Length: 214
Ligand code: SF4
Image (cartoon, rainbow, N blue to C red):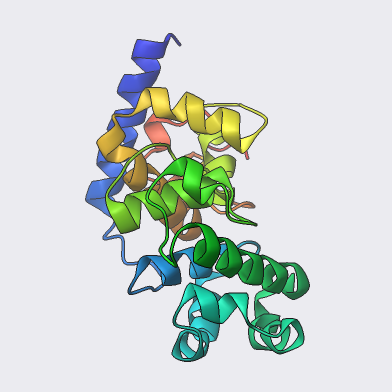
């Protein structure tokens, strides 16, 4: 399939997913850019529901970048324990607080370059933060669902999230970058599970090359 044909099919798929689902999450809950960065960082290898349970308490205590910078490692580990990889995540949150406090006046930067200065922040997280907190669509965030579904749908077989992000970014207009991420997450949870996807109930079954083959 050439790139123009691929674009047409991929955009048709997104149109159908938008018709099919009301994207209601669950997604990481936040009320300011700092909470979004922290919640998204905690969501690595963890469900958004679990993150929201943890952050509903965490955000009452840690309100500024300085609060994270000055957090006790052991205490913070206990507070975020149930999100998994708690040692590393606690270390990253403290490091993040320090960089934000010392280099950005306590504010979350609104640039990719700035966000990537923060420990534990990947391109994926940075793209989500830029899109959701600042309305800037600089790249398409490839999380585990996108990474799993895009090859099934024939959109990309890139071996890394970074390469896939670039390839998918060429198929969709920038305004759809966040939608592609959110609707593939929703579809991956609802129908196109890792095992035994429900192809018979899928709105993409006539345009999906993996129908009945997974
Ligand atoms: S047809 Fe099957 S494999 Fe393809 S997107 Fe739908 S559920 Fe997934």
